Structure formats: C-alpha cells, structure tokens
Image (cartoon, rainbow, N blue to C red; front, top):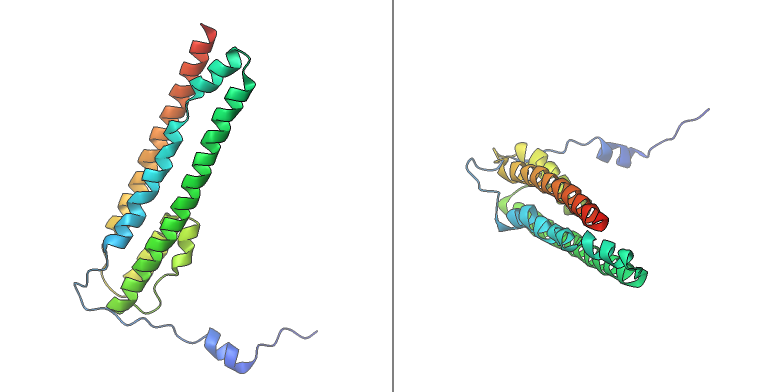
Length: 172
C-alpha cells in the first residue's frame, strides 16, 4: 500500500520555520480598529431589546395572528440586518487592524477573515500572534470577554423578565 507522497518543494514549504521577527519593545499595537471591533458588535446586538413580547401576546390574545406574526417578522428582519452589519463591520475593522499590524512590522498577522465567525475569534488569534513578537496588552481581549459575559447576562435577565411579565399580563 502506498501512502500519499508530497512533492519535495511543498514538503519543504510545509515544514519551513515560520519565524516572526520581534517588534521593538514598547510598540503600541492596539489602535482604534481593534477597539471598534471590541465595542461595535454589542451596540448592534442591542437591537434584540427592541422586541416586545407583550405586543405579540396582546395580538394573540385578541386573535390577531397577523399583527403578532408581523411584529415577529419585523424584529427578525431587524436582527438579520443587524447581524449582517455586525459581520461586515467586524471584517472591516479586523482587516484594518491587520493592515496596521503589518505596517508596524508584524509578519503574518492573524488572518482577519476569522472575524466573520466572531470578533472574539480574531481577538484570540491576534493575541496569540502578538505574544510572539511583542509584549502586547491583553486589554482588548479582556474587555471583549467581559462584554460577552455582561451582554449575555443582561440578555438572559431581559428574556426571563419579558416572558414572565408578558405571561402574567396575559393571564390578567
């Protein structure tokens, strides 16, 4: 049985050392683009709070399924637009950040396309790469993680309160 044979040039390239030369100590790598990547998604994600479950329950209570469905579809459209805008802005900000890092001398910064998955994915990869070339502050990553925890905690609280209040009002 013969195994897969990789041509010698490709094999050498795959195993070539990928050195990243260090940056001068004190190089500031955290610019405006990375901070926009940290903050802007949460502004757009806050559109979820525009959904009012009471409007849906009130419409259903009087038998107006069209109004209930209309509110749900309007909100779903808003969330879709917000999600697409978040992805587009995350890609833009990550691309600008990666370009800035290259101008500072970072060889092969973390690929900015990973921001399409989530800004946090780009932030983690960026921090890993930067640790190899400079003593980079973990502040953008820490702030991002903190915002994730705060936003999802607030969302869980809002969702429980909204549904509970809507159900209580429905019963009265």
